[in-house]
Length: 345
Ligand SMILES: [Zn+2]
Ligand SMILES: [Zn+2]
Image (cartoon, rainbow, N blue to C red; front, side, top):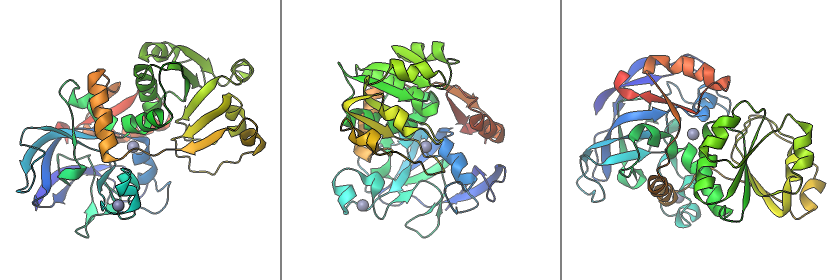
């Protein structure tokens, strides 16, 4: 066991504070990572606030982890000390269930999330707001040279969350893709869809971030608060990826799809949504969901981002600014991802 520094929420809805946690000894299949940067994902805040149900406390959030390997287990061949490594939203999966066998081990029936979960050793799993972590090597990602570690950290959740549906629904040349919401997720969606060769439109509440959106790679930018947007763009898109975590008028967005087009939700609203099914059956529309990606696909995303020099747009913060950052995320006041410099823990 190694005692390491971390930031934790001691109870639901409580501010995060500095503490120490125990990391397990490095087993034969493990690697130890010195965490350099950890992104702040909106889902960290949902879980600290028990917005998705009862959670485990104390909680060390963080599933956008980038660092350097400091120790490898005796059976590990894929990594060496000094390698740049990442950890995303889960740290274990069984390798045997249907989800694992189909390369979607994020849906493993016996998986372990990076935090707010119980690990294989029966102890609580603690996330990335910490100086070190010990992780199974098969659930560790390689961060290629060519992406700085601070802008790479958010790729481990925000990057793969957008990459996976864009690939699955074939965003690329000749395809019109809309990204709904320009936040931590949405800005990565714009970058990746643009790099894949699609014609990209941002649909945002207002035109406040229009200049940013165009700089990030969008071809068009419309405000959803403007009624004429929905008339003008009716039947326009092959694919809409919604990053919004609030209730939406789904019917209004389905009307923006071409015949056979897909609306894919990656946001995770705390409240249920309703839909008039006529908006779906008219035009053979597809309403789909998507959640992160498997380990192999996450590695593919990191390699793609390195090849295209894509990282997140970040605001680097000290650990003692985490609570302030949470408040700003809730106010949509971040461009576009807060990343904690873990040297300040
Ligand atoms: Zn996340
Ligand atoms: Zn499994």
